[in-house]
Length: 376
Image 1 (spheres, rainbow, N blue to C red):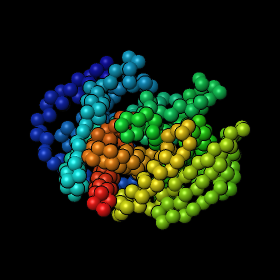
Image 2 (image 1 turned 60 degrees about the vertical axis):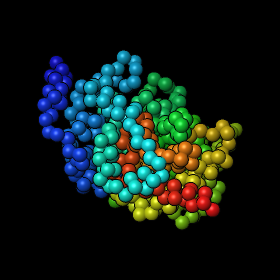
Image 3 (image 1 turned 90 degrees about the horizontal axis):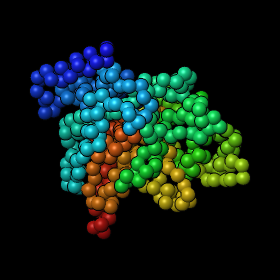
Image 4 (image 1 turned 90 degrees about the vertical axis):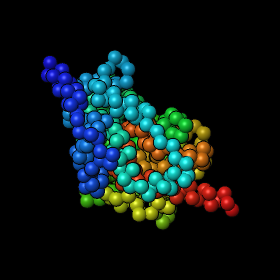
C-alpha cells in the first residue's frame, strides 16, 4: 500500500512540476571534485527534470523498485522513473563531426547540461539482499547491474557469494559483446575472486588506473613481487617495465597443465579527484592497449579495466577506446551514445562532469592527430 501511495505522490509531483526547466541548469559545482567512489558523495543538486531522469537522487526517492535480481524481463516491473531512465539511455545520441567535436570540447556549459541530463543508472542496493555480500564490495552503493554482471563459476552454484564479483561485461565498438570487463579495485577479501575471473574469462590484459592509496586505500596490491598462488592459479612476474606514465608487468599464469601470458598496464599519472591535465598520456595508453589486444591469442577474452570503484576513470578509459575506433572507422564520434551504452551495463560509468569533459578533450586531440597524419 505504502509503495502505491509513494508512486501516486511522485506522479502528482511530476504533474505539478510547474517550474520551467532552465536551459542551463544551475549545478552544485562542488560535486565534481569530491572523491570518486561512494555514490553518497555523488549527489548533484537536482534541477527540473534531472532527478527524474534516474540520477542517484532517484535511488533515495524510488521505493517502488521490486527487489528482483533480473531487472530485464522475467516479469520484473520497472517503476515509471526507472523506465524513463532506461529509455533515455537506450535512445541518447549526439553525433559529432570533427568540427563539432572541437567546438563542443570547449563548451563547458553544454557539456554540463548533457552530463547531468543523462541518467546514472545506479543499482538499487535492495537488488542484492544477500548476507555477507558487504565484504565483497569496496563501496556499498556501487554495485554491478544484475543483467550484465560477471558470474564466477563455482563448485556450489547455489551459493550466491561464491559466484559474485563486483564486475560487469561491457560492449565494445559496434556493440561487440563482452569486449571489456569493468570492475572495482580488488580488496583484501576479493583478490582470490579477481584472479578466478582473470583466468575464467581468459583476459589477456588488465588496465589499472588508480594508485594503491590516495588519502585512503583505493586498491589492494593483488599481484606478487615475484610469484604467488591464488585459488590454485600460480601467478609469476616475468618482466616489469617503467614507462613515463605507466608501468607494464608481464605475468605468466599457470593453472593445472595450462599456461598463459597476461599484461598489466598500471597507469599512475591520473591524480585523484581530478582528470589528468594532459590528454596525451591517456591517449597513448589507449593506443598501446589496443595494440596489445591485437597481438593477444585469438582465444583471448575481455580486457579487464579497474580503478577504485570501477566506474569513473574506468568509464573514461573504455569510452575513449571505443570512441577512438569510431572516429577512425566512421569519421564521427557519439560520446553521449557511448556513455549511455556503458551505463546500461554498469551504472555510473564516467562519474563526474569533469571526466565527461575530459573524454571530449581526449577525442578532440585524437582527431587532430588523425587529420595531421592524413595531411602528411
